[in-house]
Length: 436
Image 1 (tube, rainbow, N blue to C red):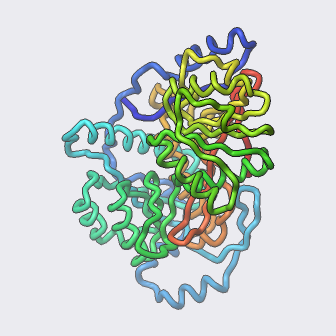
Image 2: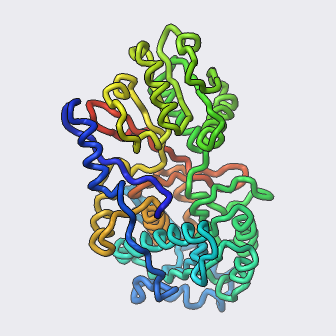
Image 3: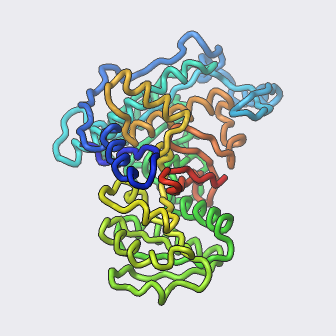
């Protein structure tokens, strides 16, 4: 059974039917059923557009590198990418991409391995349903899949394979220590490394070849504060902490970022017996409750209702999946959810992914399926448009995909995806909040 939340569909109807519709929609999108069995693919290399591309890549290992670079620096072409026009240096259009993930194809020796294997295979399914979109590009691709078995020794053996030196881009691995090893390899070979899941920011040194595609807690906190300053300027920010998983990640990052940006805020430990009037200001307040517990959420809602005219309540994505809650009360508190999964509210990209996935697998995509689709499509698109020069052209540009936006920002250690998705419940409808 997958370990990710199912998507919450749009709410509609009057207040009387609100909760009923949520339950029906959760059932329709599969919130209460097991996902279909995932099969390991028979092929470990996927070739896309073999008849496209050019001859430059065929000679990449035999040409004089200096002369080739000089030639490329003198030749430019106009490229349209996501609505913008760029003048881009000449680059090859045949690419090899290595995908290093813990598929556990030999044997899953533990429950954790079995779950990890299923999630990674769902990622693979996401890659497969992205193929029709990749086929529309002008370049040709070979996607090479390697099983790291979540093992450092196995990863080192894979990185020592001769073909790894010829890769144009690497996606993976997933473990912190393994990402550091792969990052060292990527820097030495000057190969871009996309970290798909692990948000490693404690590298040994500045590494411009590492790209965290999954937004870190710090990047989410920065985007949250951008929204806060824009939508709630002058209001009091209160961070209520419970010391658990979401709080240790996003909650701590939010506190640290408030201090770094010199934003006035208050923080306190959550208690079901707290007197909220002791903490709220006489003016407007934004209360961020980091607890993922349903009882704690209900306790906060009950305690804040009498002050709903001056409170905006913010909570984690987990709250969106709770049933048997009073959504009228949540709406009175102008509930806002913190997430990184924009597919909670369908858009033109998610609709297409869902249709394609259902037509092939007779099931609904998981968050990992979206991840595989979005990340590999992004990799192919930027290579097609910019080749190895892609970091020069896409930094700071928000690029939309089915379940995420990718907005790469250079930090002191690597490139980070500066992204968060906020949702609000208004008129019994879940709506996306646009920040950028």
